[in-house]
Image (cartoon, rainbow, N blue to C red; front, side, top):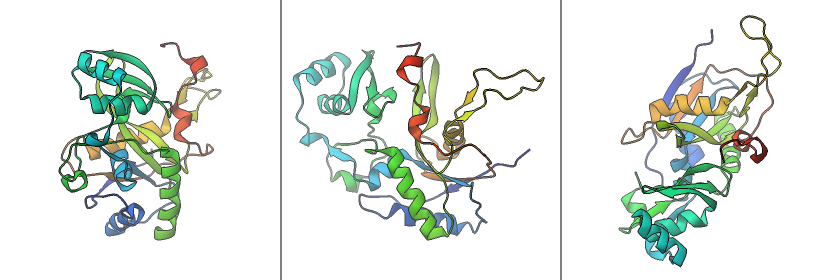
Length: 255
């Protein structure tokens, strides 16, 4: 059995324009580990969004009539609801103070992934602000992977992770929204199971599993672990992207 090692990477608080790859590389070098080509860097979405300057001051948002009406019904900030609608293709469900949307990148998620927790007071400049998802998480992951390769002398795969809730189950888990340099899914169809039966439908959400492992160390509150180095993984499947994890509409039995 492979031995999987997950190492928390501690970074200083990140602000817009910071050299995030260098901060991550410095944190990796601090641990003096021997790196292998299939070691993976998992980076929290919020860290990437901060470095990319995806802050929005709520005072700068012009609220739409539809957002104001919906915000009043849900008991939410109208400016925040306006941002959620701007980042979304459509609303899936809106009730009980919950706003589940189909994000413009294809995710089905609460509040379009917009967050207000753990935002740096300096970056907010004393004003309420919100943090949007990266514009293109897969592109962000690819840039990080390339730059980390230059800094570390070995190109490592990168996952950008976020916390998603799930239908029919309580709580959130870490998932991959950006993937570079590794498979996002492993198609196991056609392989035998333990007793020789051929697997018919099994597709493993490989990048999600790695992201969830890393999120055990990252936590959801004041843990202060925004990135994790995961070592000991192995695969032979072709590389993919975070978009591979999104179920195509023709396969969706729930909407």
